[in-house]
Amino acid sequence: MYQIFFPARPLQPYIQVYWIVHGPTHQAATIRENIFVDGQADIIFNFGCAYQRQYLNQSGKAESLAVSNLDAQRDYPVAILQDGLIELVGVRFKPGGLGAFLSLPLHEISNQTIELKLAFGEAGVELENRLFDSVGDPAKRMALLDEFFLGRLVLTSPFAFARYVADYIEASFGTARMKQVSSEVGYSIRTVDRLFRQFFGFSPKFYARINRFQRALKLLSDDPQLDLTTLTLACGFYDQSHLTREFTDFTGLPPSTYRLFLLEKAAAPPPNLVQFLQAE
Image (tube, rainbow, N blue to C red; front, side, top):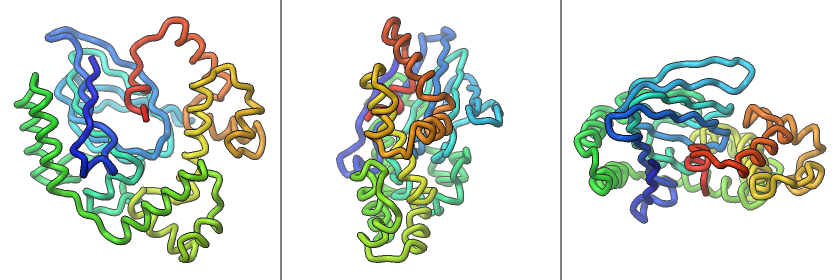
């Protein structure tokens, strides 16, 4: 069962949703879903069995995760498999949103999974314990999360600058060039790159790639019959080969294969954690 909750209003520019996933009481269940590249970070409080994470890039690496953690922004897709007793509480940050609560530069933790204590100290461990004690009480859990993040919300001028750069890139659907971005904000490309990495975890150029891909993903998801040539032109890719490379890097699948998946899913839709986690 999936439940989605919105954070307190002051947190909404930074946190997309809180969520709870749990299986039948005292019964085993199975979740298996692909998580695509979107520039977002998550905190996952795991009160159930360990879950497997498989890398969908060329490495094919897999790992088992049993403890709660901060899963930072990633530049490659993963598959999640959990088979057993499931009880998860999650925090889904908007791109760059984690930077409003964490003093550590985000580029230092990109592509990493970090224990809560290392990210938030003893307060993170205490929050985990209080969430565990509140099982069966979603309202209490959401109140605890709001209290925790409201107490750690720190906004600075450099963060606001990085957010402005992100807004400019998003408005162009990832087609803005770095010279345009630099001209818009009045700083050198090097300065823009440095400040953006601090709060978003990667370069503005890579963030533009993510935005362009996410637009393609949405258009194809809305209309699986969409011609790939039309998709290429609509999203600003150089050619169809460029679209295929980017789509494969960020999903693990070429767009033609993903389209077949969407068509099969439409015929017999399964529970889908990807839609849940990546919903607008």
